[in-house]
Image (cartoon, rainbow, N blue to C red; front, side, top):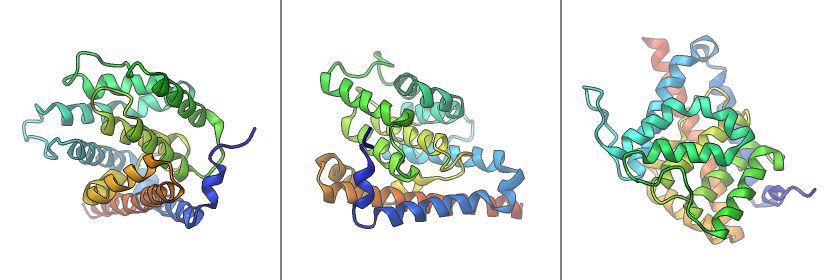
Length: 242
């Protein structure tokens, strides 16, 4: 069978950007702290990712000192952060089931209809295609798979609410499940927040389906993965200094 994502490797700059992203994430896994104490740094990365993802969806970034989060968007993002590791196996074998669970977690305080994508032949078909890719339907480098999962879910918006939070969580699961970032140390969500206008423009470009748009989005995602690795290094450096 022909790999449907193989042509993306020939887009200008994509192969090099994917390799640079892989190298950056690999290096942060070799950080002295992450060789043994990665559980602590991964937990911090997960919370930072959730806060950034919620902010991109219009929620706050700060967690109250009491620990009781009332904002429904941030609460949903944090629920996902807590559950994400346990969902990776489901994502690898039954990705649509994992997406439904993500929506339950993200939208529990936002919607009465949780866990169900919109009723649409287009949504169903594209989710099925995405599921095929996630479960072994492509052999392109992991950063490209991450970019496609992220961009497709943003553009498709298969649920009634919280699609951005879900898309970023699915991208994070893909980074973990493909072995790109198996410990979940990177925080590309922070880069997306810091460059939110560029993030939005690139996602719109991806949704257009043009070669230029696909290139723009994949390069953005790869650069955010590199930036996320730098964020991870700062977390590890702080842990080493403490």
